[in-house]
Structures are given as structure tokens and as C-alpha cells.
Length: 581
Image 1 (tube, rainbow, N blue to C red):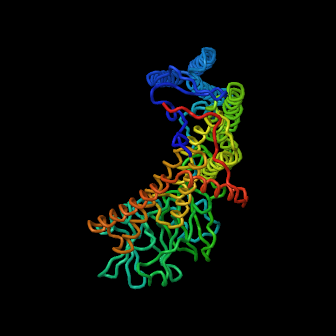
Image 2 (image 1 turned 90 degrees about the vertical axis):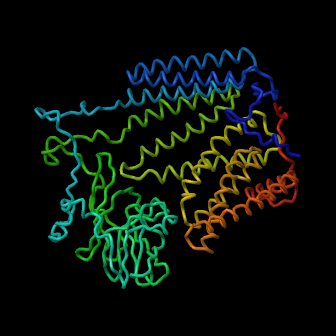
Image 3 (image 1 turned 90 degrees about the horizontal axis):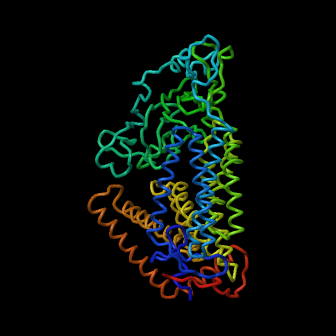
């Protein structure tokens, strides 16, 4: 029968004997009582906190001083780890952590070199100036929107591009459409629907309702081609903002329904302050702002007549940096001081990431230190991230890549560990101890990324909640497969969020969107019933844990391998049972 000890979390601060002794392993499968107590770990934490502070303060004086202090502390960590190994096996957990920190400080030393030697930063006063030009000349972005318009644009379009009056950028904030008035506002009855200060509402003079999906900050309404167009942001999404429309079919629904037309976000460009929607020359134009390496940039966006394609009139997306009073292409054009730091990125790879990973690999192979997984795992992620930044265009939105990379990276670690644990009859003690580090780092990363990917708990999309529930089930299976409790804890937190969402939707279906005293009581009652069901299910599982774990592990194994044999596999056993303090 699988003992609860098999779900013990082995990571820094967890999985150690609470009596204050460390019970690590050198690979021989023996647990040795040590003398590193709670006060010892606490003292070591104070030392590291002070060391980081000294390094930070010395670096603020001069990077050379920070480099020297970091070098001294790194040598101290390595020497201490080697000394403790010669003392005996009593301090293996302490030694393991010392090597982890030593590898990270090797990384910090490489960062010092990458930023200050390989690719030194240039301060503003170090930029080359045109001879006889005053030092007060600054770099600016040409944000004159009139220059973005095609030759031959109408006088109305040129005047609109030149308009920078702050009071008109969001006007009008209401519109008449099919015998109704659409406007941006808020009332006490709608406060529970969104967390924003306003939402798009519609009234016929006697009844006021909201527009679905719930839209915030609706502005600059335009009647065009028998539809009502406006700029807004969906209250439950961070990316669906831009141009929205309401046609006669949507206006006849109850509540009325708007459709998302599109925006710069759909093309991977992160923009802010979309304003001044207008219809000119048979097309829809609006202004927006976004960040470029050269600085804050303004642009004009145009939808074609069919509203299928959105065009940024600024080509290229990010402008050339020019000096005030000097025409583009003439003397005085300078290289942007915020251009992509290729030397620093390559220096980060070859002077920081790779040396750290090399040292971690050597220590793991020679001394059997399971904590080196943290340095190898995170180091590889940093290498991939830097290579992506080197290859990606400067004006790309990097967030989608990092979101999916870290999600898939942590998921791959989860699945690989689960597959290994289920297919191995005997897991080496070294790998058994490394499981705690893998589950802690990859598990917490995966848990956080599921909330970022699916925008839980803020999203109202049922599809996002469905995939979030699948992620919860996956974490439960992983907990059974790897025999660690951290994935189960994360799954429990997610289960609570799903139970709350289910209760809220049932209450919304019965009572509507309002959440008063009666509705809140009903919501809590539904939540309590779900809690009872979860408790009963947990009791049934606990009473026959061996059986259910077997079923779950073999089901998952067959799904991963395509193996359909009915032969039962024995539960994974470690080489030596671990002691519990």
C-alpha cells in the first residue's frame, strides 16, 4: 500500500525532518542523521540575505566592486561545500543548497561581464553628437500623424490627423441607433457585473440594459454602413480591445450583442489609447499609441471598406530616431541608444547561462547533488529566452511567446517525470530526491501559467474554464504518478475556483446577474454542497487509495504509451524507504 510518505514534498524547505536534522542521500541509499537544525538553516538564510545586500550596495558604487564581492562570496560557497563533503554525510542537504547557490552566483558573475564588458551600456551623455552641437539636444520620435497619410488625402482626413485636442479624443461617448441610445455609464445595479468603472449600456428611455459581452470604456461611436461602430475593451479579457460593432440583429437580441471586429492586438502589436474613431473616404480610421525602442510612438490604423484588413499607416512600425531641428537622413541622425543589445544577449548566454549549467552538470555528475536540476532547468529556459530575443524583431509583442513557452516547458517536465515514474519499477534514490525539485519548480510554474493562459478567475469564457478544469485533472494525475503532494495542493486550489465559478453561473442562471443578499446566500449554499461532495469523494479515495492509485496510474500509462494490456504493473518502489522524522 502506498504510504502517505510517498507524497512527501522534497524541495528546499519541504521534505526535511521537522526535528531539525537533515536526511539527504549520497547515492548509496542511506539516510544519515545530521546536525543541521532549523536554527542552522535560519542562520544561513540571514547570511545569504546580507550577502545579496552587500553585493547590491557595492554594485551601486561601481560594478567592479560588485564583481569582486560576488567572486569572493562564490569562492566561499564552493569552498564551504567541498569542506562539508569532507566532514561527512551529515551535511549533504546543506551541501546541496550551497552548490545550488554557488551555481547561481556564477550566473551573476557572468551577468556582470555581459552587461559591463561584452556589451557595455551607453549612457545618454556618451552618445556621439554632431560637432558644435549643444549637449542639450535630445532624441525624439516624429509623432506628426499628418506625415503618415497617403499623398492626396482629403482635407477632412488631414485635419483629423492633426487634431490633438485632449477633450475630443473620446467623443462622442453616446450614439443613437435603431431607436435606442447607447452610452458609457454605470449604476449600482451593474456594479457586480464588471470590475471597471463604466460599461456600455443601452436605453430606450424607460429601460436600461447592458450590452453583451460586457464592454468597458466604450467611446467614439460612428454610424457607418447600417451598423454602429465604436472602440471598447471586453471587460473579461486583456487582449480583445479595439473596434466593435452592433448590427440590426445584435440590437434585436436581449440583451443586445456586440461583435468584435478587430484591432492591432490581433496582429501581435501591443497598443494603448485607441482613440478618435472616424469614418472618412469610405473607411474607418482611429489613432493608437504603442512603445518602440525609440520611445513612445503614435500611429494611424485604417480598416479597409470590407473591414477585413487592418493597416498600420506607419511603415515601419517603429520610427527612426532624429534630432530636433535636423531633417531625417541628414547629418545628426544617430543610432538609437535603446537598440537591441546583441552583445549583452550573447554575453548572457556564453558568460552567464552556459557556465552555470556546466558547473551544475559537473557537480550533479560527480557529487550526485539533486538540487542542480534547478540550475539546469532554469538555465535552459534562460538560454531559449535570450535566443528568441536575439531572433525576434524589436517591435514584436514578446508576451505570447513567453506565455506559451513557459506553459509548454513546465508541462513537458511534468509529463516526462510522470512517464518516468510510471514506467520504472525501481527509481534510483538520487532521482527520487530530485523529484522534489522538479515538482516544485515545474509544478509552481505550470500552476501560475494556467491562470495566465486561461485568464482565470477573471474570464467569463466557458472554453477557458473548461481547459482550466482539464489542467486541474492533469495535476491530480501527476500527483499520483510522481507521489508528491504539491501538484495535488495546486489542483485543490483550482478546484475551489471551479466550484466558485460553477456556483456563480448557477446563481446567474436562476437570479440573473445581480448579486444581492439572497443571491449570495444561494451561491454559498451551492458552494457548501460542492464542498460536501468533494469531501465524500476524498473519503472514498482515501479508504481505497491503493486501488484508485493503481487504476489512475495504469490508465494514464496506457494513454501515454498506447499500451492496452490488462497486465497490472506493480507500484513504484524506491531503493530504500525514506525515514520520517
